[in-house]
Length: 349
Picture 1 (cartoon, rainbow, N blue to C red):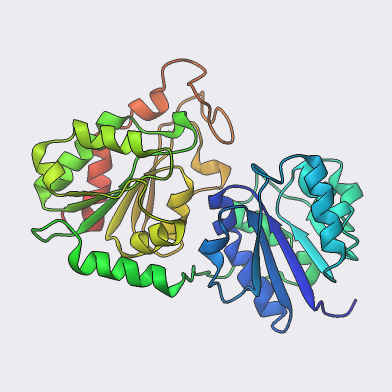
Picture 2 (spheres, helix red, strand yellow; picture 1 turned 30 degrees about the horizontal axis):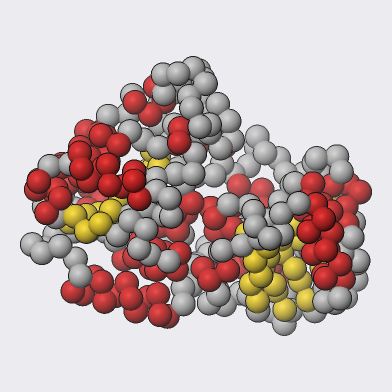
């Protein structure tokens, strides 16, 4: 087969999954420098990747909104049939993703060999090797049929210039007074059991403020109440050294702010991936999920704290409530332990 002129890459899972796809996209661009590469992401994430140099276009698929349901997947596949793609790579394993590929008419379609219906949807399938590889390396499996067998390349997140400018202005004149390194803290998560206890986050704010750090309190839409509780439980000193940005940042602005922070404290969540991809030192608290699942922050500056419990992991994503009703996976990670890991990253050890 001749080299493709138009390539579609489909990754409509969560924010972190899309970020983890960047090394594969980097490798794909290096292999096909003249091809058009189109990235299809979950609706709402388009702006984050709008300036990514490997990509010619980013498209959102509103699978939780107006494109909900299998009928919308079929409509999406028919629209792809009119766009002259030569190659389709799907990083998602859902039935909806398989249907999009199957009815697209794209001549070469690569996906994972499981679930079973993928073998009907794709012209080529590869093993995901879930128990053997980390997620970035699993994604690299998808481009092996294209002759790309090198290790995953170092990827970078390139943000739109307006977002970079707004973050620069914030750090120049909008931070709490008094100087000191900047610790970004994000206590939220889509999954409640992935959230380290509010009072533990508050204690870390207290310890950070006492050591001379300034704090940025971050939260996405719907997480503002969690951030407010963290602030309410913290000391007056911590509150005086904290800038509450909960719910105030767009996704590109959040990424730009994380790229400038001296360190970051987070649960296992999408924004965690925005930090490590920009080499921001971080501490991530893992509870119902484990580092061994492969979706962890990479790099020498990343530290994952977790407890070795027989009930972990209790799922790929977590639950709304602890199945055993104790949540020990999070409660047994003490604030002092987290601060001990954070302080050297801030130069405050």
